[in-house]
Amino acid sequence: MVRTVLIVGFAGVQALDMVGPFEVFTGASAFAAATGGDGYDVRVVSSGGAPVSTGTGLTLVAEPLPDPTQPVDTVVIPGGVGTHAARHDDELIGWISAVAGTARRVVSVCTGAVLAAQAGLLDGCVATTHWAYAAQLAAEFPAVTVDPDPIFVRSSAKVWTAAGVTAGLDLALALVEDDHGTDAAQTVARYLVMYLRRPGGQTQFAAPVWMPRARRTPVRDAQEAIEADPGGAHSVAALAERAAMSPRHFTRVFTDEVGEAPGAYVERIRTEAARRQLEETDDTMPVIAARCGLGTAETLRRTFIRRLGISPDQYRKTFA
Image (tube, rainbow, N blue to C red; front, top):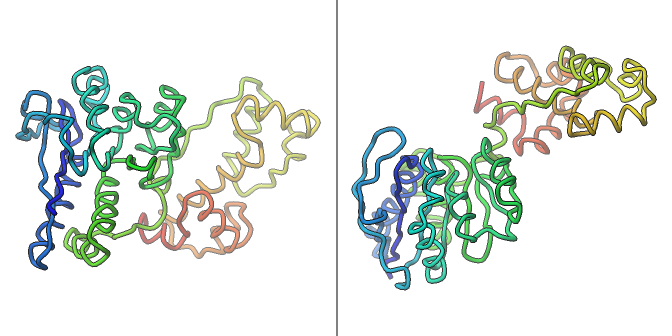
């Protein structure tokens, strides 16, 4: 059975959100043809069949949006700088909502999750998107639980959401594996020179999170002390003493003004400091752990896996 895949285009779309899954599905078709199986019929579609101009100036040929009542296998909704305008395109959003009722599965890539949410496909679901836009998605669609870390998430029985840009390839490979088995997906991954399942989540690629400055000067001074010396002694008692507050009162005020408890803030700053050390130095894990206030190499490893979903060794191999 040849599976029809529709990749939705609109003005300002992210080119790789479209081309990445396109390459995966057509690569799987080549593997299927070589092994006597059936592959995918992959089409780019847009409102009225208009050419799709991407955010970088590349223009793609497209077919008109087909009748949404006709069953298709997979619909891919990409993101990009044009997502904001596309979410107000009633024809496009109406088509996405309608086709979701007949498609076997609907996939969003990057900020394509905004269009899926606008069409009502993510209400009550856990979804992911590009790490830089996760907070915005959560704020604009409170019925959606946004998790900014996974490379992709199965949000419901038929809807999947992928993280930023290249995560569309990861998700497409997972769908090929689901349809045709690991050999097919692994062969396509090798041809594309990528992991079948990359280690860790997208948090490892995210820029350090800027934390709000506290309004009160003593609390802001405590923040700056932590950031200036991540490896220093920053117990709640020591920080509270610096701020001339009781530990209980300091914890309450700090959490209210900064958005997380002092201990979690200290760990965040120490983790970011360790990330920089892993990227910029050849120092050993015990040295980095001690310098950044994480104690031992084992504590460093556990903190990285918990916060970034990847070990320090893997992080260094990827980003050094």
